[in-house]
Image (tube, rainbow, N blue to C red; front, side):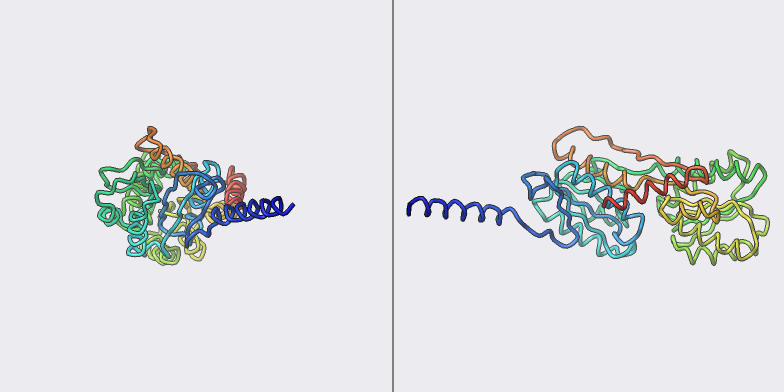
Length: 327
């Protein structure tokens, strides 16, 4: 009897010890998925986004977490405090590059050239999401074809405003690749519909600055009837100034975030060109896992876009709410 009790005690002790060895707390900004490394998986992907503090990037993060769970891998997910915290993002990248447990990295670069310098000659598979970078060894870019997407928005604006109308472009930062591509796309779509862009202004992605810019545009160009903006926040800012001036304008935003879609439903903004940030996050992790496994990965994975109007805004908003609820 004594030997039986001792054997049972030893077996219980070993089992408890094994459980303790499998448990661990993720580090700051890190998520762990069911079936990931902590549950016996052997693939870990590092993901550094532009930030985790805005609505748009929360959708991307939700897609990352969904892929982590579905694919049974572990993801180290981080992002700096803001989209101007360049040094903070570079520091995060340096730390992940030095972490031998991370086998591939997904990056949304704040400053593409600076990020390329940090990456150097790393042997880790590198993928870019949302914003591309001129890195010779990159595996893939996952995101929206910004020029093509914006062109669809410009075409829709022209169909609403009619041939012969004039338009204003409110961009983010002149020289930024994403903003420049969207400007080219909107301009081309408007031109094909007979609408000319006669004003180009920039508001650094900020709604309040866009409102101030719009006030000046309406003063100097009172005949403007169309406004196309680099993001939903700036479209909302332009709409506020138009309303204050008693102007009814065709206003098109970009990104398709929850607030932007709600503005379409409310009627303050005509439409928004919606990206698929959730899909970006999911497909980026999916592609990174394929790269680790040595499988083929497309050099450009286009996550598509949709023009959100009054006709489809309610359904799209419900989809966004579902994506955030699952994160």
